[in-house]
Image 1: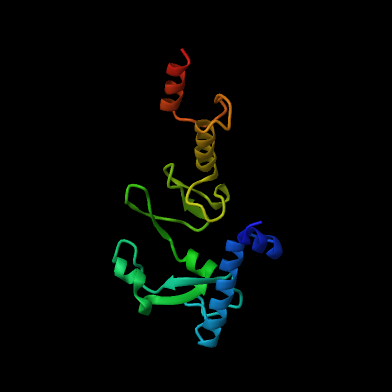
Image 2 (image 1 turned 135 degrees about the horizontal axis):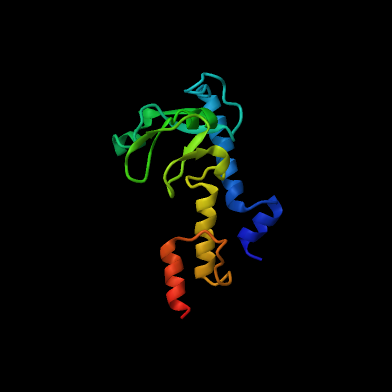
Length: 165
């Protein structure tokens, strides 16, 4: 048994996952010791490592990559406070769009959709993600011939029909 597998077995979860959780707990402890455990967005104390997120005081995206790395631009926030501040998103064509509360922008298909149509922490709606996964499974031979119930593009169907003649 490999060392990694042995650690995974003894911890009861993947060793990489365990390491990341430990790092978050350590970071929270250090943030608390430094007195920087007040959320930059709401001002409340951050008491859970799961809720801790690194936040940028000034937006860096579409502004300056240097702001991403600038340690003076870093604060700490609750994950929910940090993600809720992103009311503007950039679609796949580079256009800025307003994002109303409770909606997300799917980067695979156009338009805003309710957050319930997304898997957690995904930038693609469930329909697009499932279609992409089905396409991959078909390409690698994990599925049989596509059916009309599969979500595929017209060009994919035309390619299949040419090959079946």
